[in-house]
Length: 285
Ligand code: MN
Image 1 (cartoon, protein in one colour):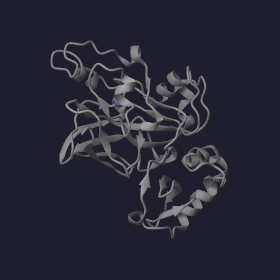
Image 2 (cartoon, rainbow, N blue to C red):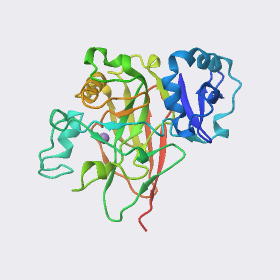
Image 3 (cartoon, rainbow, N blue to C red):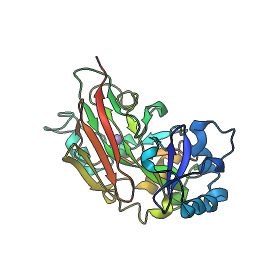
Image 4 (tube, protein in one colour):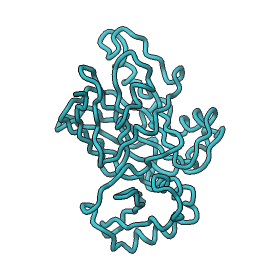
């Protein structure tokens, strides 16, 4: 199933007739609007049949008549994998690298980092570049959405903790600032438009994805090239941080990162998911 948040943070499911069916009533009315997707994921075992029935019944609203928001605007944790594709590690360091001459730590050394929750933005927003004269890059990534509390999970059990997957961009300021600062600015984590439930992703080690800026393809890869795959990431991060239902892991970006500037349109397409299309605006003035 494909799950959405739309309009005033209502929950929706894509129906077989092509409409969007409102399933907000599957979570208690006193749940804060921004926590509805977390509540839905927590209640999933009890409500999934009801949601599936709604998807079969259809008769919802047309997608073009609603405003799609980030499908998970308020996870407890937003964890991200650094340099998790070999070819991306190669383009970051060395003589011709983004960080010229630097030795880029491997994911075995760097492990992970945390982005601020408030950097999440949906397809209704835009990527806002806040500093003049600086380089900002796109990073195309597959996001994992956690389905149940994960603490010290073994790699072989880890995929059973996955609720679903979603397109995510890890927008990045290049420069000497700390990684969390460079990647946590407002609007630097576009997410969505949908979360696809894990049962619809046949093999998380074989997901095709590509990112374009305008008509130009910048990144095209497959999760088979991940150094730490989805299961390993959940094992590594849950060993030190309890992962909660609805938490988001950005699994890392492949080679092809590059600058974005005012007026660009950045599109992330992941097989089996809706494209994430974001406009870029310079707000430094
Ligand atoms: Mn990244």
